[in-house]
Length: 257
Image (tube, rainbow, N blue to C red; front, side, top):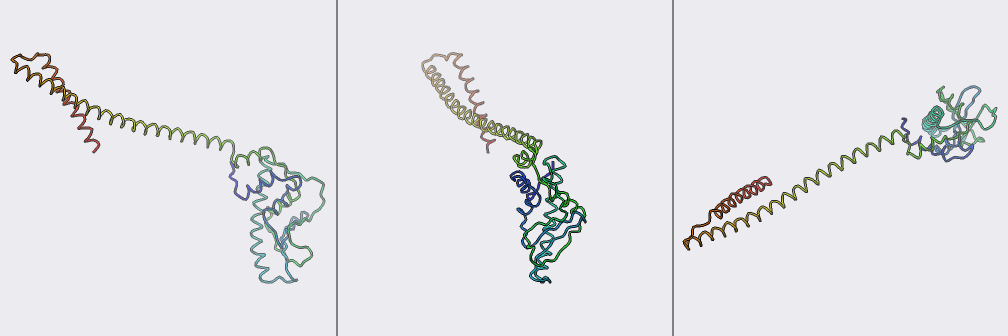
């Protein structure tokens, strides 16, 4: 898919929003590139072209010559951008080109240079550029629906837009997966913290239970009654459980440090 530059996007917008014969090379070019004191002259019969620059007398001043040198290069570059784009639009059937009326005029001039003032010329020497000028200078441009669709898509093809959507979907899925993973870690930490608190509380409860049973043993011993073997077994098991809980809690605290 071709990537359009900023200048080409301006031209396409002019084509899409223009009306009738306003959609032609001359009007679009002049609306984008101001041509003060200069005219573009195209001779289709001799296949030649030149730029005519205004001057105050029959002989241009050094300032007028320098201005012409600077403008000549800029005008040529912008003409190339316009004409190469028009050729691309025609080739890709993004626009239709036709002459609205039979035109036998061989010499065509456009620009804001005054015709009643002296001028000096600077030739356009590129044969391909002259050929494109002669081909498109009189033609009206009718945009195809696909060209309007291209502008609506911000000058990106449907394939490129699908690719962008797929990329966004993929990265969104990655982001969601990452978020779920982070939440899982956070929730795990919360569960761990809750379990640690519960373990500490359970350890305290077990200590109280063991202390109560031991106190019961002492009371029974003082009364001369031998403790029940089942109570002794329960006390031992509670003590072992308490040791395991304390060991787990201490290992968790060490890992946090």
